[in-house]
Length: 147
Length: 368
Image (cartoon, rainbow over all chains, first blue to last red; front, top):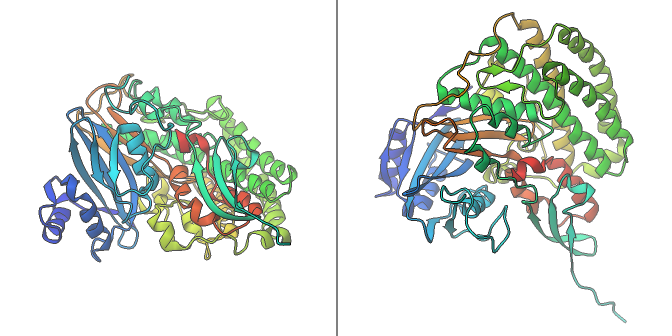
């Protein structure tokens, strides 16, 4: 009774055939999805009966200065496996990613947190406002250039 | 003549005894009935994730104490597991046992706080809470023997635990476990078999399982809705694969079930501790790691544990330096609040306080 991590290869193969042009690359432990395709990919990962990734554990963002990396940790509670999906957003200003709120409502606060602290907006989120800090706060404190 | 009425918006909190910390609910009422709810938080935001980027791996242990501050042992354990995985090392067995014993004692203490305040929110002021605190106090005494601190413990360290338990810890733990069962039976009887508690909580604010899953709810709240899911079983860490315990599951996901699950979990924690005490053997408690550890550049890990409130995880990325490049904390309290609106809308003001208590949040962890 243990959760099995899915390999990036398994995920990439399935994603590529269901959502064309969605996969950038993959490694042993994760799959990289093109940013503009993330919501469609999420819909497939959630709905596909074999993958059945029904639980969104966490959304994290990492600032690599030349790009932001957004990481989705997913689990299938029924099939008892887990997956790591990543995507890259380039630039510093006006960053946007499609929201996965429509797929997992658990994204609600987590996407707001990424916007608040990292400055990546999620398009299609019904309530995209700051969560820890107040509206009108200047900057996004978890960015590497915020001191 | 008809009486004109209109909905009224009220701020509950940020400083209100029923909100369990500095937390604000903007609630719109029609009389006593709740029409709209918006949770507002961030009052306790200290930027823990940012602070971690400028402290070394050993320093960060003290920051984790201050997340869910009634559950510090478990936070320490989760963080240390993360660092160990980044480094590709494992703590010595005795260290793992000590961490497990400490974490399970902490889970009992944390659930007792949850239960005590739950009964207080129902209107039974102070007395039942003191029954719970009587037991919790003795757990804190045990922590003091282990590490000198009672709340901000920093007992687990990367590579094991700070120090081996002193000789007089074991008889004290034994003594605690003996009286604990009797004391706990008393609390259980007072609360779970109380007619008023049942009438006030059964069938109130049920959470359907599919909604709980879709909203990423974890821990006792998820299990109360009927899913047997516990990371101690599903992804065993430390010595959880060496002990036997059950995962209690509720059926309706109502306020009663959420508390019933916590009561049962306390019993299971006691079982785990007893098995650990039987199995633990002498040996080193901590790996000899350098003062400043430097994981490989590019190493990353998502280390999760079943904390008292749900899935607590540290997502850490290393750039080869002495501090993490990024440390994201997946906080169960924050994410469990996603269902606030569903739980509260349509119910009455008096139930609101109890329901919020039944989710058992801790603001240190929500805001980080």
